[in-house]
Length: 292
Image 1 (cartoon, rainbow, N blue to C red):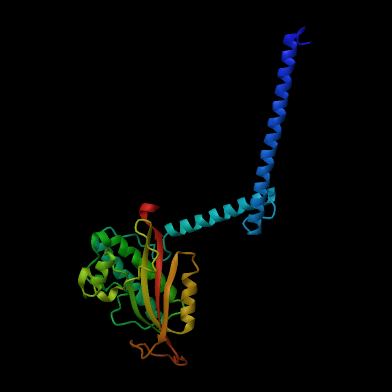
Image 2 (spheres, rainbow, N blue to C red; image 1 turned 180 degrees about the horizontal axis):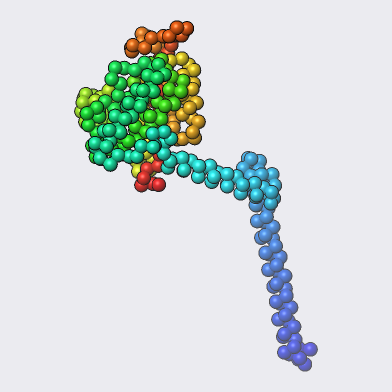
């Protein structure tokens, strides 16, 4: 046959060789695929044993994963909006444009807080300045107007919340010294009247517990000291947490109240036994402008 039909025979032999090669490649590829399937199944079994994957992948599990991802994204959106938002209360007063405007805004704030505390019978120190004794006679420097405005907003919100279950006595309101770095702030706090303010206004928030990240997260720290009952503390903490705002209670200290330091006197029927002094540090967190 090879002698009589050399071309046809050659063609048949070539086809047979190609067919055999194809069978060998198919078998080899099938063996490789089976090896990989076994390896993947083994890995999947290990992950399942570790609880890292569901028992079986299905369209339902995929949809549940997508729903979970959507919920996480929604929560992140709410946090992002909260961090970029403003505090309720006090926001009706626009940010002052100059030092004189800032001075009169602080005067109006102090008058509002004195009237509110007086109407509720809460004791105040004589000529209480609510953390702004530094600006008793003049407004903040131009570069600090925005910072002081936001501090005033936060303090007014906190005091308004506190006065819902009024304390017996408000002993101190302090804020962080604006416009100074950590080292300069510590040095300035030891010098009364330095850095343009009265030292009684200021305290230093420990950077180890603060959420502040330069260029990313801004924050404002406030420390309140007041005398009252446990109900006053409970009402205050519930109130500042009821708005979904990024307000973080950094510390709560409780000690005996000792003798009252203001002229407030109990009314008939009032029981002032067992009063406590509460010292609370609150930090308000917000996205820095550069990061928003």
